[in-house]
Image (cartoon, rainbow, N blue to C red; front, side):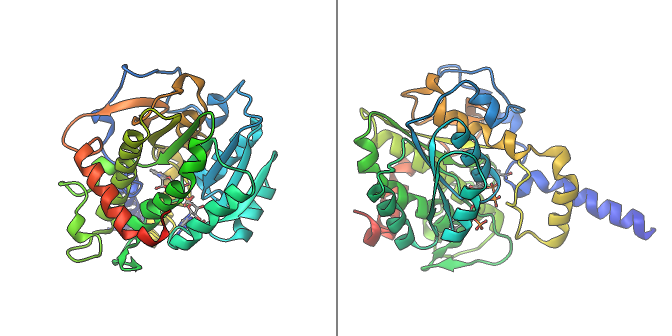
Length: 339
Ligand SMILES: NC(=O)c1ccc[n+]([C@@H]2O[C@H](COP(=O)([O-])OP(=O)(O)OC[C@H]3O[C@@H](n4cnc5c(N)ncnc54)[C@H](OP(=O)(O)O)[C@@H]3O)[C@@H](O)[C@H]2O)c1
């Protein structure tokens, strides 16, 4: 076999794994629009600018975690474009400042390192002290690691960054958000919550790396945790003016594959544009759920491609018992940082 042909075959095989690495493998056939909730005219190709066309968000405050890259950057840019004051968080103040300075509109940079629960406490306190309690809280930041098990404070790293850090942030901001006329919390999850998570859902006896570790399964678990957090939060917020929903942005060409093996990264760079959404399209669902007037009061739902959806087959995305247990476990894991 010639070198060119072998390289082509290697790249083709790698390209086939791209949806998988973002947790977007074979999901489309299981998804149907939930017509019991408001359904809009937007879809897979819609952009964040399109879903907010004509909206005036002046006087509203948004907080977007992970504002310096990918979906978070585009979400901040478009919300600020529509008049919202956006608190953009970055792992360092400098990263958040650079990102905030590069978009038009009112923005405030704040440091938030999600693997450090004290940072989440400090971020919430800063936001409240500055009078910037969000009307829209978009829990967007996340990582997808590859390779060996990594622990943070004794807990698996993706579970900490993608879920527990946001758990602390949300709980710290919640009392102030409940005092507002209305507020929305949007969790950026992933279809990996039902395509890659452990078959039995959250494996509570393996969160500290006690048993086997598979990086993509752990990513799926962290994204299932996003969905269950949203579900339990919506339940706890019943009767209040604050809503909680979770979304999947689609497969989007961002920096999410930054720690993938070189071949996969190269393939994502080469082929990603052909099979993935652009960040402008990828940010549409979270921006839509955060701003769309027709979704006032909608809570506990799951969205893909700008619409509420149901998912067929075996999964735990709407498992209320698991969601309740996850809340208890998260409370224990972060007890020193909750109010
Ligand atoms: N792209 C996709 O295909 C896809 C599919 C499904 C779901 N998602 C979800 O979409 C969300 C946004 O990801 P993206 O695609 O926009 O990826 P991205 O371009 O890599 O952006 C991720 C953001 O999260 C931040 N972040 C990472 N680790 C953090 C930590 N420990 N503390 C605070 N912030 C941290 C990053 O900051 P630094 O740049 O400083 O590291 C960056 O701002 C994630 O939750 C991801 O799971 C993405």
